[in-house]
View 1: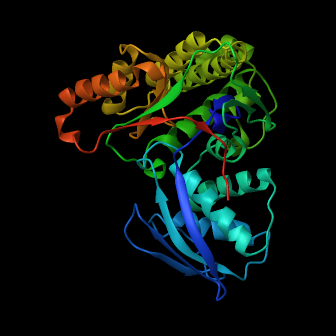
View 2: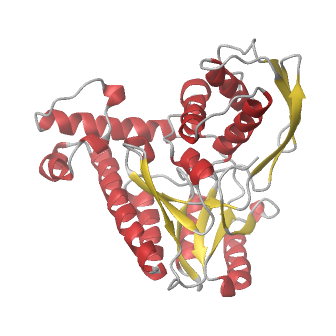
Length: 359
């Protein structure tokens, strides 16, 4: 719940976005994607004011955000590709960060980590039109191999918690449902507004000072206020708030469990998070809910949930590597038994934790 300034646990994984690039001294951006049709081509000083509606909007928005602070003269040509399916795995943030990193290098610009994080977030918020928080960007820039990122998105304070020597072996499994998604046209933005509405109403009931609606977050509302006035909220707003407060508690307990090396507790918290996403946040397509239920009953999976907002896309799980082949076969068999039309689109990927962006 980063968009409500909550606390989060996160990792980077060893699969993602790769870009091979070189400088174009005429200022033109010319980039080909191996995952999407249509080559991106535009000048750094001639970015359309509004999004076009294709994958290259992430590049156009990034140029616009960067040029607000730094003069751009040199363009970039290259090829970009993703090593995981597009849909629910922070892929848009990864595209922006990879592209920004290259564009900064050819222009001799050195961004601090927090600058590239906030610039990538602004690209999605202000240009692409997605009301996302900053979890994805923080994970992709600041993560460290064999560490968990514990982040407070209100003040951007964070800790990298190392994997304990006492912890059981683990890897990350990614289960791609076969359904791609676009946050901008999903119910993601609606959920963000419902959370803000819940916070705004709770502050009014409690007689708290509040400012503009767009600046209101559930983090501004103590849990005690929700306990006292939550029953007055419309059901939908109450459920969204219930999910938020539960996620903050699970992030706090998860960080402590990770410090102890208690992977069983951490996995249970992940499953609880997934259940809350379904029941209280009411996200998740039928396909993702099916994957979640299959994960819950599959041996060797410590815990898991939707990746990201849960509208199409992927599920992710922490698994015992000794069970990886069995998990791959069982989940695929059970899932395709229910959704046979997704054979050839559904996929399984085994990943490890990794460092953030590297040039």
